[in-house]
Length: 156
Length: 156
DNA sequence: CGCAATTAAGTTGTGCACAACTAAATGGTG
DNA sequence: CACCATTTAGTTGTGCACAACTTAATTGCG
Image (tube, rainbow over all chains, first blue to last red; front, side, top):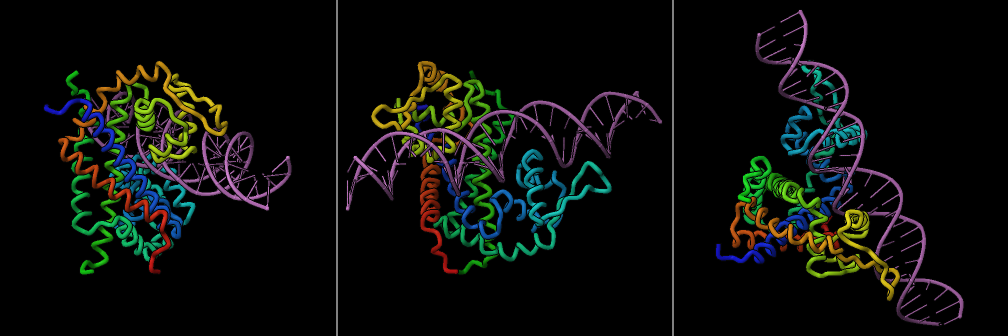
């Protein structure tokens, strides 16, 4: 309550701006590192989940990545066109589409093993710093998410 | 050198992922808060710069925001269509287009004063935490940026 | 059973990010 | 002056994020 509004104004601008810039910078690094694999960064995230879980309906994939079908459907279509995944309607529930990596998709994992190390190097951070930053960001995301859902509770 | 590759793999995944999630969560909050003003978050950033500097060529605007003309040109066109800015070729250098807020654009600043406070509230962080996080992110961005430009220095 | 509500994917439309390119103006050099 | 490299915007094309909507299948309830 002691800080004048102008301070908040300035700082707030910078936190969101810094976050945005960092996110885009990360994207740039991934773009370079993933070029060889022919993957974009979001596609890489999808493959990471699939490598870990083997096969998932689009819904579950979206929960892991916080993405909806509007984003995933075309992305998965591109991955399928690239021969990395296959999509097939579930027999038990025909609303559901199960996504799973093809042989080629699984094989790509080998070539992707160097990606994390390269990116980690690019950050210039050590393990502890990364862990700490990640924890802060997750807390921040959780706080921001509740605002999204609860909203309207602003004392106007 | 003591950490097995799998740790890096897992952590790295999470830092980029956390950052991405936080960035999108922030975007969501701004989307809600800026709705009344009829601005998107990137448009808001442009207006912030213009409110501070009054008038700038597209080039300078891009340097402030780390954005190129491919992003700014259409964005500025939309801001102009909304009556918030005017673009005019510089007389001194006809390659340059100077952007400046219209009366309506300047007036919007009044209505935007509450935005930072609302967003700051949504973060659930205090000033010191915000400042600290911002500093970390800026350092991270700087490190990632050098990778982008220097690249190829990987010991293959 | 029959029908409304729900759920899963997909589609459409808008806007942003960025690479690659074009067009036009400027500046420097012979 | 003539010419070429550089600079500034803009355009085109691809891909992602998200809101709003559609379609089809499933579930639940009377």
